[in-house]
Image (cartoon, rainbow, N blue to C red; front, top):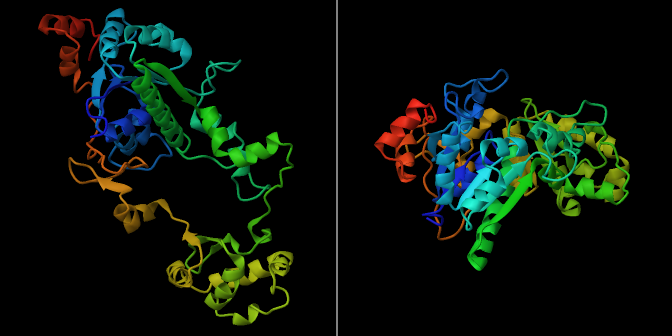
Length: 398
């Protein structure tokens, strides 16, 4: 394993920071998840919240906290902070996304933690960055990533519809991947200098990066063109269409001169190829609404599976717009190693989105129960039976 022997402390909550630790664990790191006693990380129970997919399994926790050892530790007490400091003194990476003011109260701010271990890579994740007037503003992916970046206003069907709602974790997961990359850079710097460092990222930075093309246009003084309704798009060969079974696909012509006659033949309307309204690309753009209407009528005549077969055979770039219920049956996701089985019971899960040749990932293991590894971790930190008993009596550990 690439990171065998690397010790990581995950002292974060919800998704964006902890998922960076999960990815390190995928490649062999020993990840210690630190949670408050009692309910633990409140992300444990998100799966049962109103509006979330109904399941008898905590799917969100399974995905984002697999393979970690769990330590239930009360960091409000000095004795709890002492336990954390002992662990941090022997760790390689310390990850947190607690608010900056909370970090100081709990003894896990960068200055204090880094002083314990000069080789430690301290990974900090925030909502809005660590400088500026809004450093203490609470941030979630729906707010700091999705709304503030302009994505929420931009990603909607057209300018006349309300801003688009995000879905759980859609900003957190890519932001966690950025933090993972920052940690690797920190480890590389440590390898070259022998010294640890602080690395970080934020939801604000990742949201703007995700919307970078449009945001850079705004920074360059560009004038934003509002999205037209679907049936008024400027190019019929780049759009999305409803099939006869009410399923959708998105069409993206990468070589329109090649694709146009192929598309006309797929539709069984070869006469369109030389129709003066559509003969050239400029003609098709000028008459895009008419061509979209023709496409709409044709695609509504058959099922999506039939159109999928026809478009695949023609070599036209498109993709079915999947419903969530389609994902468990997507064979390509399994064959490409994107969906993999849990080691424990073979149930499927989603692996981290990268690979390294010659460095296999650890088979994913189901998440630990809250505080499952308390005793072994306390012993690793140097506590004997009597000391562990005192910590339990004081409810420092669960």
